[in-house]
Length: 171
Length: 181
Image 1 (cartoon, one colour):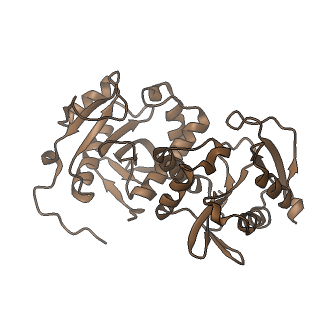
Image 2 (tube, rainbow over the protein chains, first blue to last red):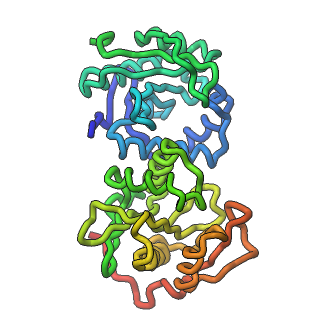
Image 3 (tube, rainbow over the protein chains, first blue to last red):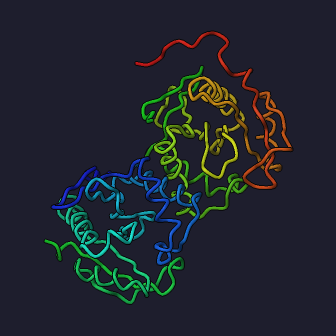
């Protein structure tokens, strides 16, 4: 099984595996309108279940989504998701609060994770799925070097655009 | 609080925190007809549900144990143990035995160890088991464990039966030994 680094660091951020203490901040994000692009808002009960699955994903796959720490505070998550191993893992990123936006923090986090997956773990490719109306994320996908496709949207995110990220882009 | 290394032993069984070794068996169970009384999952949902079982351990410091024979600690026969997600009205002892592992008394043996663990080590004040009314085998196990049906209390799903365990049956009657390593 692949073993991703438990912690990554960038100029401004520490990325580490999710921990129990992150649940209140993650739940606050889940119940807010910020999850409208990804099937939310969710209840506290759903937030617990989603966060529990995020933790268990690491145990079962050896990689998963990192919690992004900025100045000691958990501000979001970024990393690959592979619920279904029949296709490439899906690269995801989210800032949990509006005040973390506009500083390039999500891009900084996602770039570090993608570089680790491609360069250290030799993953060949990742997909990215973004809701049609999530303009900020479409811009970020392009900044990461992702290529848009006409692949059909998944049933849980109608109208979403699928991008491919390939290792050679970051080589 | 983390209990990453907690393992319980019974006469025949070893109960440990579930991990990647158990994913295939748990996923197969969750999509099987036998699990339809619990949830109706696709394969991806089943895998995700098992991932959430592991996350429950990390968040709560306890969770359902992977139940193995002592002679084969890599092969889970089922998931049994304490369970308390945020939509549960009370702390539960749950049990799910995988295909081919029923009828051998394993669930009973694992549930007894889990009840002792919950009352003695976790310090629970009460424990219930939520059971689908169509699950006769599970009802029989609850009764064999001395649990009594409680029709008055809250439950996760309106049709669930609630079986209430008697702490006096499971709490140690002798002062607990310090077992910290």
